[in-house]
Amino acid sequence: MSNISRRGALRLAGGMTLLGTLGLAGCGRGDDTAATASAKPVDSSPAKGTVRVWAAQGDADVLDKVIKPFEAANPDLDVKFTLIPNAEYYTKLQSAIAAGKGPDVAQFFPESQSQFLDPSILRPVPDRLVDPNSFFKSLWDAGVVKDVAYTVPWYAYTYALVYRADLAKKAGVEAPATWDDMVPFFKALQGAGAAHGLGADIGWDVFNGQDAAMYAWQAGGSLLSSDGTWTLDTPAMADAIKYNASFFTSGIADTSGPTFLDAQPYFVAGKTATMITGPWVVGQLDKAAGKDGWTASHVATAPLPAGASGSASFSGGGSWGVLAGSGNADASWKLVRYVSKPTTQVAQYKAYSSLPAVVSAWDAPAIAGQPLLDAFLTQMKKSRAFPQVSTWQQVATRLGKEMEAVAKGEESAAKAAANIQSYAESLGTGKK
Image: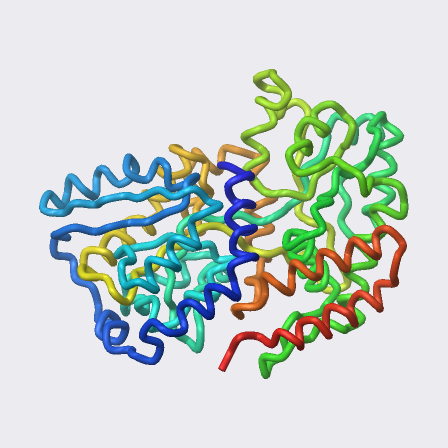
């Protein structure tokens, strides 16, 4: 499972949100005929014809192999895959849709798909195609606008605490349970030999903004009010930004590094002792250490420490949607239904380590037998969807820059919260 590809997908989405909204606004918005028609139930007859699938390189690289049983059971079906580099994916998809030349089925990212959730772009998920309750709620909610679902979740991830268990044992400390425990825990790991207790993200971009959203939820805040207006200039957001800054002002993290690509080498070398990151890391640390079994003997995971309102995290991953202009919606939805089955998602995990979006699939021995994934399952059950508004990625990116100023002592957390509120209000939410 590629951390680089996943972050790359989000990075391109952050830059393309406004362009995507404007570019798609002219291609049939308001013409709901195709979308409404596709909401009829999909039967169990064989899928036929050609289905064109577009996906970003990464988790989808193995999908042609994963769906071999589906193709064998539907011999009159021809599935044609187009894999596109992450840095180009949304740009090419948006251009194709605007030109009326989009695929039948497209991959999306729950963290950044909001600009596509419109009946002029995507068909609503047909009645009874899947059971919405079988997925992690936050992932399903990420594809829903005005009680209409447009995407079906495929794989899942969230953030948890990944730390050096050997150093924690040497220091005689356990994983932190609350915000107040965090800095003392990190300092204890430093005392056990780590140069810094935490290897924190210093991109100061959309990903830091996502962290702040996560911490704001933990502090009891929200990002949008019930009437859909921004609520960022709040004590909870200020607390979230201050909490993040405390990692740097206390000396347990360094504003000069590690960079994203250095995070794992620093961790295995003991330059840092903890990461707040996704589950893909679990399968990559042996390689970074250059030794099989290093992870099992050196690493532990834990849910994120709780703030005043709990241990909420965000949900990310992959999802599928059928375009409004698809010429073979029936077969397209049958393919999506197959990919959403627990057995298929377990097969995807075995092929690429993509963790399932279907909760029951985590009971499969291949996944349940991986104890370092337990914290991520716990955290996924406490995850939330980011705001389903087209300007969220821009707001999150600006929030990252405000976090940098606070971490470097250049402004107060309260001022940062006020600044981001003003910026968000200037953008609006992109909703009508």
